[in-house]
Image (cartoon, rainbow, N blue to C red):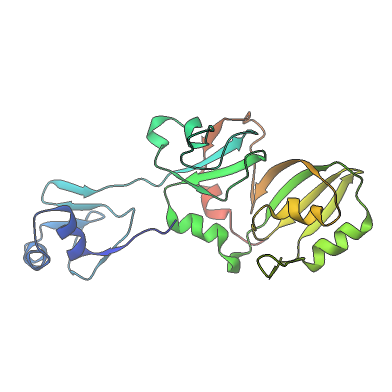
Length: 237
């Protein structure tokens, strides 16, 4: 989700009856404040979480919100769905306008992030940041050494004509693996194991970047992220 930005004159014109030409006069008279500082230019860029005040009227004062949710199986990673419960349905009413940063399919479980900060969510998916997503995968059949080599080389999917980035596979038990991805193709893990005709029985995301799923959260529960968690999630180890 992309966060929109506006020039100050366009922003005020959008939220009041003043024209863009009026804004120059308002600024010259010191009637416009941005983040508690008197505005000096119509060219100033207003972002989603900038506070804007004209005289005594607050035109914008948004608070960034970052939530961690332990997604249960059977819940859809969507803002609305006519047939199924969505992750938004699990939230209190004042969080209903959040969007999902990195979806999980309906039957997958684990760490899901929700926010109203488009720049932050985009940073999690941007390929240059290489934010790792780590999963615990239970399979129907035993894993062999060939799996790790194939995951590390990347796999070509002819339908989209794409080759996946190298992924890491660590065998934990005969039928359980830890998989780390740096991208999120459609049903990627299930399709990669499908190359070996091995059915994924469960898929549980345990971390995104430097952020692990809080073990205290039961399925369906959520909490706010701390400031350090928000800032440090994309830092490279």
